[in-house]
Image 1 (cartoon, rainbow, N blue to C red):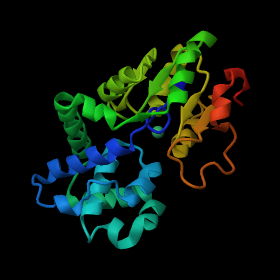
Image 2 (cartoon, helix red, strand yellow):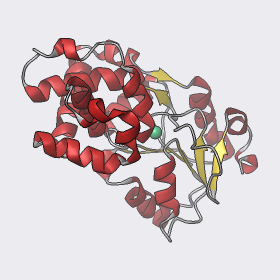
Image 3 (cartoon, rainbow, N blue to C red):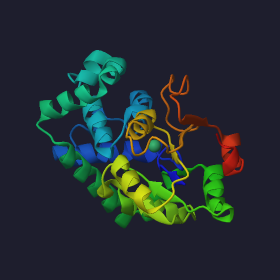
Length: 252
Ligand SMILES: [Mg+2]
């Protein structure tokens, strides 16, 4: 069984905002605009989390929130998310940034904090306890657990250790896209299913002819868009906590 991390195993909202804000300050090279970005998580940032695919997009959201003239502030989050990829590209271009720079800044501030304030950084993350316990128990059903995330592998590993969850395999953004990793895994192992809270990701995976038999589970407790759980495409099942608790054979 393969599981996503953020939004499925952990609620890291406090850390997402903290690190995105810090990464933004790191990128602009001064802290003069601190007051423009509150320490408290802005509602818009929370609302937009279901659209986020990669960490760098969160840094971009922080930058957008810091500028009154940005697309996000001027046109609103609904407009931004209606054409999410395009809006991200425009927001990057307007600052002359690349996604790689933003991801590097995000990983940098996370490493810094992990080194200087490990327990503080860990405490910004709230594990979904029932999920951690259920995934730990897969072993007893004869299944291995793999964690597949767009977060950095090292950070994920630290958090998993802290939650006492030890997957057999762990893949971060360094391993390539989720589709690439699953395609490679499928050549070596029989895959039982993939739990994820981003519907777009599941659709992309199911759209690959070599992965269209992989049972996909949309975690109902994750960062879902309001309409995500309505009329799911064939092969994508809404996974509720009560189903998660049942034996794997009863999930579909
Ligand atoms: Mg997720």
